[in-house]
Length: 142
Picture 1 (cartoon, rainbow, N blue to C red):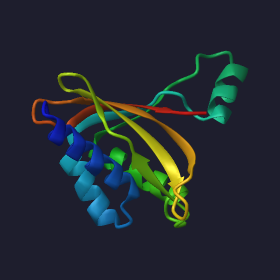
Picture 2: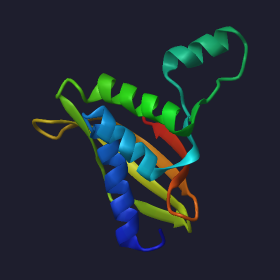
Picture 3: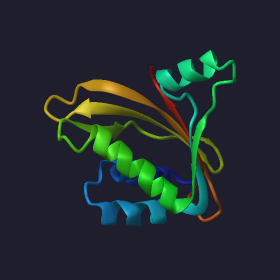
Picture 4: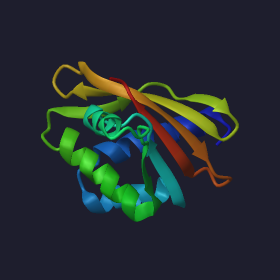
């Protein structure tokens, strides 16, 4: 995944996975894009989780899913929450190669009508030697 066209293709496929309405096709994208032992980390969990951790006097946890089945559930739930209504889709900017095998994808959740950004974030992907995602650290903008 060292050439720009490959990085761009990976970013396009990655965003397409989050927008895919068909669970079977979405699952196929998960298995195509991610290593079988991959980890997706939501680095900054939602405010209610941070508040609950603070109330218990424990460090704020990151939220992680491991492996294809958990990734399918995570991506499917995000689709249901943010895209299924037809009001929003995810869109990505040009990806950035940070290091060999490490890319950053800045993304937005945009309205389907006017393409107005209503949310967004940054994913930092670490790739295995085959170019599949090994780790994904997702930072959602507040």
